[in-house]
Structures are given as C-alpha cells and as structure tokens.
Image (cartoon, rainbow, N blue to C red; front, side, top):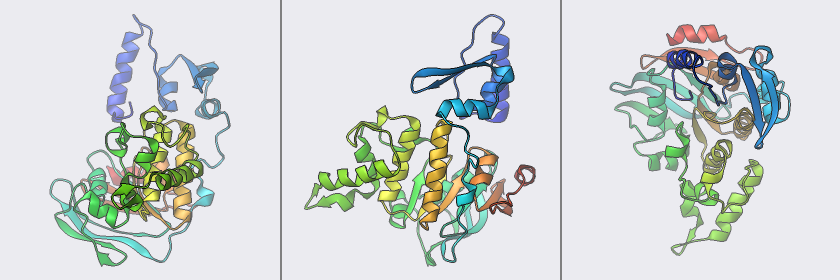
Length: 329
C-alpha cells in the first residue's frame, strides 16, 4: 500500500475482505494502522524471528512498535525537544516560481537550521516543486536565490554545485545505484573530491565512508558490501550519508521514511535533528500529516499548484491536522 492513495487502500481492503471467505490472507506491512485494520491475528518479526503473536482486536500501535524495535515508543517520536529554531541567515529563497501544469507563483524562504514542511494531496504540486529545486524539473518562471545570489538549478549537477541534496521517494530507482557498493554510493555525489591525477583514492574514499557508517549507525559488514543487500532503512541512511559527504547545506527529503520500518524511521528523525542542529536546512515532504507536523519548524500547504496556507510549527505549539487538511482541500 506504500504507493496507494487512501481510496485505493480502502478498495484493496474491500477485495481482501471478500477473499477471506474462500482463502487465507497473509498481509505484510510496516503500516501498523493498516495491519490493525485488516488483520485477525498479528505476528511481529524482528531480526528474522517471531517475537510476538497477538489477536488484532486487543493490539495497539504502541504495543506493536515496541515489539518490532525491541524497545518502547520514544516518548517524543519526532524528537520535538531537539527542534532547533530557524537561524537568521536565509539560505534559500524562492520568488514567484512557476512551471506550467505543475505549480504557480510559489514563494517562500528557508533559513539555516530550519525544517520547512510542504503538505498537500497528490497532484498539489509539492512533488514537482521538490524536483524543481533538485534540478530535475527546471522552472519556467520566477527566481531562486541561494545565500542571496541568483541560482540556476536547471540540472542535478547545478543543484549539487549549489549545495542542494535530494533524497527521492523512489529510493531504489533514483536514490542508490544497486549494482554498486555502500562506499561507491556514499561518494557518488562527491567523487571528484577523491580523485588525484585521474585515479580514485580508494583509501580516502573508504575512510570517509567508514566515518559516516559509524556516525549514522549504518548496519553493514563493510563499505565494500553491495548496497542491494542492505535493508531499506540502512539504504536510506546511505543516501543521507551521500549528501553529508558532498557537503550539502540544503537537503530535500521527499518521503524519507517511505518503505522503512518504525525503528528505522526513528533513526531518520534523529538524523534530521542532527542536520538542523549543525545549521543545515531541510525541505520535507512527508508520508503523513503527523510526520510533517512533528518534524517541521514551519509548514506551507499547497493546493492546485499554489501555496494556500502557511503554519508555524514550534515545539509545544504544533498546528492541528484538521487545519492543514482544510487548507489542502
């Protein structure tokens, strides 16, 4: 269900319920609310072993989470207590940005140490906006300023050159090169920094990778391990490490927790707080409203390709999901 809209999930569940009369169904998912909604019995696996079995009727998301990760749900799942306030320096400014059929007249500013969330339904223009700022979908109108200077982000290479990193929603298709090792993926966006006289300095490359493997707690036998053998959560950490090694100051996260388990999600939230604590700024498109509210310092809502509302989201003063939904539809 990771790529399905709500109405499509509802339709799928109707089909599953019809099938129950004449077949046994095994439903595998990281989305615990869906597991509770469709299941009669639930098995929880951790590290390849069944660690818990329970009737769905008496289970809760918090209980299942605790069994999945081997610890209870963190009292502050989104690390709100670590949310840093926006700095005084405007790193990215967008003025009247537009692209026919995608988005129009979009303006906002992003400051150092800030997480700016972008909320909206499918087709609202937020995905196209993210890809535009990553150099994948050049704008036709408007202006982009980085550190107060005009910036042309008409290709991924130009975006990387301006310090923009992009963590795409389709990790395996766009975020990693599955035929390469962990090390090769980590240095992919900054390979020129490891080249001397036409040769890649493998020792320096391995040392840089190992440092981030340890810092981000990437579970891999070594940097030489094929990235395809890692779990989704650890692959996502490799993508984040790639942009940290590249020195990106603006990181665009397009559904960064899609397809990873709840334990890995907590790790990603911790990494987001680490980045903003170091003065990086983050543009966030999240899988759920709860996630975008919990992680963001400020939220803009897009509807029909335009910004329809802006919400402050400070610690202890988070906006209500209902207010965001009203602005979305």
